[in-house]
Length: 311
Image 1 (cartoon, one colour):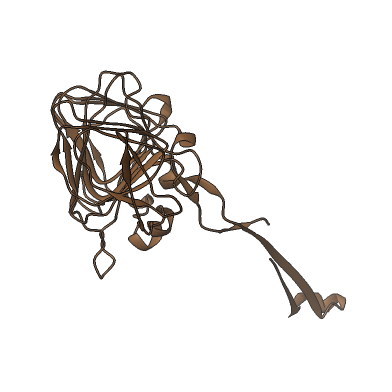
Image 2 (spheres, helix red, strand yellow):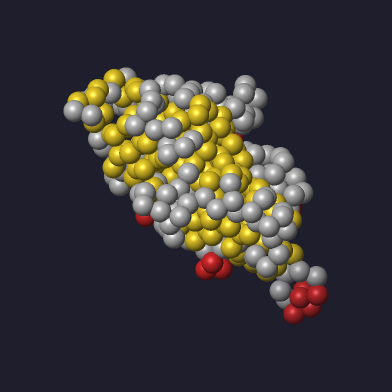
């Protein structure tokens, strides 16, 4: 889009040499850039969407090692990102912290904070989240393996005990609370329907699964239905504990905008190969919490159209 303005101005002093008017032409050109696919929330490895309070909290004795991305907290509180006690947080590769609030106890980590960082609203990031499936199918168990119903948009299933899943989209109907089983699968997405979902892996329980690499839910391992009130305010009604395991394969985005996500340690060097998005993200236990974010293995979305000034 080019805008050109032409103006004619009467002269004063130039009249002496016979110039009574001058013509001035100015123009500006902008370009409209269409949507493109990219990581959401600027590719940060950990994202907290809570508008106030401590969005990310490292307390106690855990050791956080976050590779491939930084930490974003949407809270305007001070602190919105917090570390205390013997907890350590490292972000190799020059990644840092971004928040409209402030960070405390994380000296030495690059930080952009305060009024220069805009706070997201639900209306702004709603379109970046995965679509809501119809959940019009029913999963079936055959020879110990769960399968989605063919030609449906999400198959309902309840989490209970050890479960092995074939690739596909599953709609979780229950809120299991303390969980002792292991959930495993390759190329799977779990859409959690419950507004008050609560899942805490106990004992030997664990999530050992990888997200699909194609389709609408490429890179999405678990998506908890966001809870928003009639005024467009994100609600905090869900809880999920995530445990890593040195021998487990845990690949794909955990997208839980309305959940408190508590991270537990793991014995492996890679740990979670995920982008962790929650209402709040904090620590459980005292072991190493290793997160390796690779955009190609995680969810990406169409970004809003932009207008660029060329000249």
